[in-house]
Image (cartoon, rainbow, N blue to C red):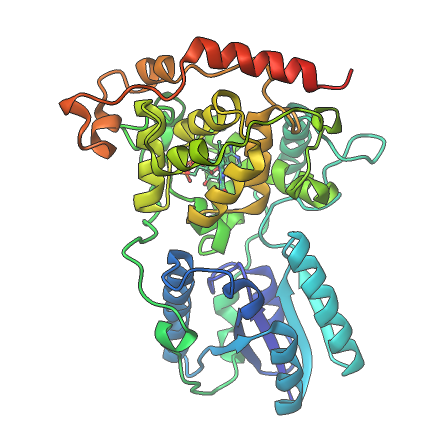
Length: 427
Ligand code: FAD
């Protein structure tokens, strides 16, 4: 008789709600991770995120081995894996932390039904956010679609309970199942090492975050995003700490929860405009233009540097993400879904809610979005945020040899975008 704790996007042993509750179960706990073919099959074999997951699991496994346990790693279609597990073990209880993406909700519903037919009890927990689902709503119970009131309500609620509880899993480690499962290599999972690696996070600069975060050459942001995405840090520990350090930084973490709440409440935003009045805009969607944007050869240094940083490292500074997104949508008149998909493929920190939320923000089609007539001028952005061209030179090696001509002229593109939006938006 055993319990299972199922790791998904919470790849740590420390301060995990679901793991804590599992370890308090009366059965020994087998820790499990499933490499899900439904997700992996569409990824390139050297996908850096799979490498990061594998590294994070390997760290967990080493910690578990120190206490006489180990991680059970499976690969296959999640449903089939669970069917076999239930035959192999007498599983009394299953614990996991909730994931709010549409695919995950569908998957978890199917697994919970399977567990129920097996008379196995499933328990799920809020872990990846401070407030989930319908915890932050307007007075009438409806979801917020504007950030500032959401943030105010979030802060009010957080302050009423700060610091939020952290979970001391270590004190229950003795309840891990004693075993020594083989830990697969990345190759055995069907993947290979990527030269692109996730950086460790860094919070040293936090006191000045608001003054330096917008300057890509300084490179002073936390690099927390992939760690939050895969749960290698606990959001409770982070927020309890950040709350006393820096309001602007904290408000970025609240943006993360805002977009998660939007995705949960309005799952259509994954593919469709949040504001359907924008559905009639006539996009140019030119494939050649799109290729130039992807490869960082538009002739606008700020845009090209950003895209090259993304292609080479799987990361792009937030200020530059805004510039390249605006350029694709407004200057090239390519619909946001194309850029969103490209980012989803390349970003180490790709997170459906943040990516879709920010792309729709840039397109003007989303919640609390930038007004459509605000068109970033990439040259002015460069003068403001990379005045000495340090960031640009870092990513565009040939920059000093004379840089190519912009592929579209700014003033023309700006007027075209505003006119096309105006004509396309339903009154
Ligand atoms: P920091 O500035 O140190 O911020 C700390 C944390 O706050 C981040 O790790 C992130 O969790 C959160 N955060 C900060 N800004 C935002 C934001 N605008 N929206 C939501 N959360 C935020 N972020 C992702 O995590 N995944 C994505 O797929 C993603 N796609 C984006 C697409 C576009 C077009 C744009 C403009 C932004 C996108 N962002 C995304 C938001 C932001 O750019 C990154 O979170 C940030 O650059 C990550 O670096 P950092 O951790 O050093 O950020």
